[in-house]
Image (cartoon, rainbow, N blue to C red; front, side):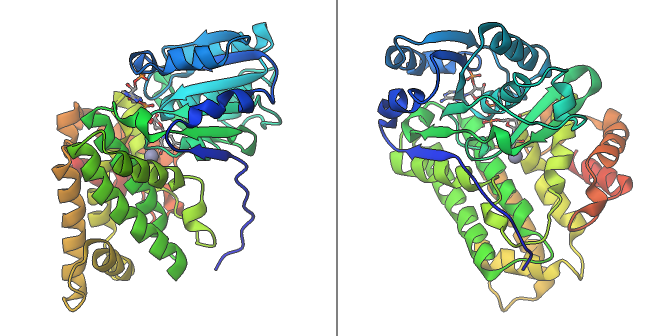
Length: 387
Ligand code: NZQ
Ligand code: ZN
């Protein structure tokens, strides 16, 4: 078991009607609030109006229109400008992972004199950030409980994962009812995203019985409850369990003491989103089984056997290679069964830029250090197999 040094400072307030506690949480900060949100779903579900009602007496500056795969220009730049101009005290971020991620970089950029891109690329160190409170409306990324924000820069085809302890949300409000309106497509993408977060942390060299059990339970819960959310979008119990499972996905709690994973599927998917602006969870669902197929070897076989037996209930008396092959097949079939397009061509990606993307990923994602090291040629083969 590896050494670790772990702290997640975020307060989670979970359940029906918890937004009633928003005024008492916000009272800890000053009166100037930057309210960040996306393309309008929070207005359609009445959450925007509710927030405005609860925050009467506050000076609220708005940054709406944050897109999925949030963009550095204009969203991050505009947010930083607004924070500085209005001397904002706290950011209230209402939406899915894209809104939360964008708000984290805005929070850090607001406390930095130079170009915020320096923080994202780690040219400069983050030394402070504005406090962030969020109200999550989409279960998927785990951004509500982690220190990461993934930002895209269209002109350079970059999608970079920024991370710093200063940008953990101060408080996250998680009311599963706000996720009832999430579309089938985004619900399925959220299931795939959280499942992949778990898989990335499960396929490592050095894991514990404890973490393996946690990951296996996460995967079973996401499949069972994810399906229920798709069958009945207003099934509170299923939405609630899915929301909590997603929250555990990215803040490291699933892998305390494990060796590093390298997060290879994320490294590959971020390039797909950067080049083609596709939905993150869909890209992951397409890549995951092809990556599994590619890394299956004598060395990785025992992990696949454990995964197949404990997650999909495959008969442990079968030959190991047969269990491994079936486990990859089951992974593919599950994603397909929840309606995810399982080929890159179906999401508008053809072979024309595969070589360029493989080069970009190999150069920027450090996947030669992953659990199963990937060279540029390995990445190219995984992408070709995903077409
Ligand atoms: O923009 P609005 O109108 O709000 O609509 C959004 C958006 O179109 C909609 N939506 C959100 N809540 C809704 C809703 N529609 C109806 N009812 C609701 N209650 O859903 C669409 C997608 O939203 P988005 O925030 O983009 O989805 P998600 O939460 O999946 O976030 C994806 C982003 O997070 C990054 C991804 O790369 C991607 O950019 N990630 C962040 C991570 C992190 N911070 O740790 C880790 C992840 O691996 C991931 O990379
Ligand atoms: Zn993800």
